[in-house]
Amino acid sequence: MLSDKMLAALNDQLNAEYYSSYLYLAMSGHCEAAGFLGMAHWLRKQSEEELGHAMKFYRFILDRGGRIELKGIEAPPGHWKSPLALFEDVVSHERKITDRIWKLVELSGAEKDPATRVFLHWFVEEQVEEEAQASTIVQKLRLIGDSVNGLLLIDRELGARS
Image (cartoon, rainbow, N blue to C red; front, side, top):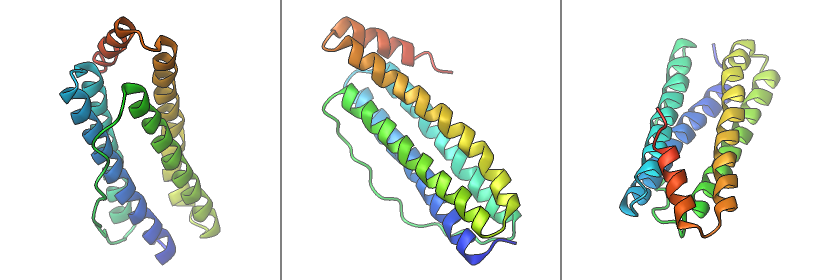
């Protein structure tokens, strides 16, 4: 059984995961409208992945006897000045999610809830991967600077995400 404090925190994270999906979908739409179909594809896949993360929290809460509390999802931004600015926002967002996961891990310890701590381990590892992927994209975008050819190559590379 989840403590009230843990349940509230997990429901908050469920909302944060839905927001992540929503944010990446908004970013995908922005990129597609700008003609960056590869980036749009990568971000759409990221949106789907984040929805999967939300469902992991959803299922875990129910499996532990908790009640789901769906809350409103904040509207994400809809415009970015450049692909670099957009992917810098991806990195920033992933770091915020990482911080949220770490706070959940700390809370699970304080609440003496080893089952939640074990569940969260997957997310700790996932966030390392998420931050690394986004940081690599930012690094490449910074390297190419104003090169249109470089931007098109990165767009094509991101479009290959399966």
